[in-house]
Image 1 (cartoon, helix red, strand yellow):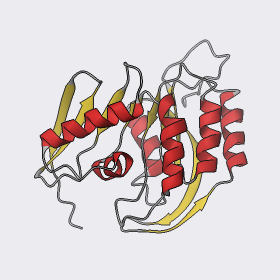
Image 2 (tube, helix red, strand yellow; image 1 turned 30 degrees about the horizontal axis):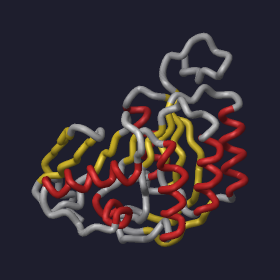
Image 3 (cartoon, rainbow, N blue to C red; image 1 turned 90 degrees about the vertical axis):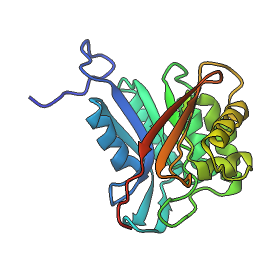
Length: 224
């Protein structure tokens, strides 16, 4: 029997319903498709709201087409009216109008944990998703709603206007600065992704405002 997604009136919840809010990458390597695959692999039920449609493959992004903010608002309201959402993961937002709508709708549900991935540009060819003004709106309106924020090093450099870290110790210092920049309270997390560090490994840093956890894997050459 296929899994039946529980709505708010269901007495049985066999797995958590996770909402991914992001763009659609046709290659499936990032964005909404990748999020849904990850949620499924971790035994969650993935739901999705589309913020933009991209023209891209594994090498580059050629075009970005934003979904109208009112359509995104309708997607969110109609979904939340029926489905019990247990957590939210936010990806690419495209512009300030979309950020405003998503922040407004999610602020109604303060108990739902939110993971914010501060997607600013595509890693494949540095195509920009957010201009400076929109990034400011994201930091002001969406970041305070998040329990976990997951910038990579390139994004962190743009957010706090610091030089690219060259060592793991500099990464830890950057994670601390990001925490102080985004959060006024404890109980939240910065997950700083270290894939851009010049190293044979990919060292990620998790910081909760007090202590650090290092997560490190050997870098894999994918032949590009």
